[in-house]
Length: 105
Image (tube, rainbow, N blue to C red; front, side, top):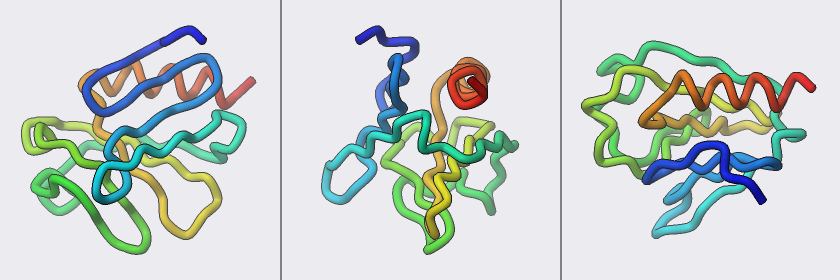
């Protein structure tokens, strides 16, 4: 398995995106690229999650990321489920490009 991107909270490999510290208390979520229906990158505001370290709502769930208040972009992963994972990688542009490339093929 080749790692395409890795930071403290996100790993992109050849087959899937792994979101570390997604479930309480410390479970990870692995999403095969083939299961991703849509991705969306947005500017992060105080209302859209900048102050949230972990958690969310029925619609969006953010993994544990204590550096989130200092980040500016988020990526929403739509797997066709009720709750959409939201990630805030250290390099959002690189992760977004990996996701675009892996989900469009």
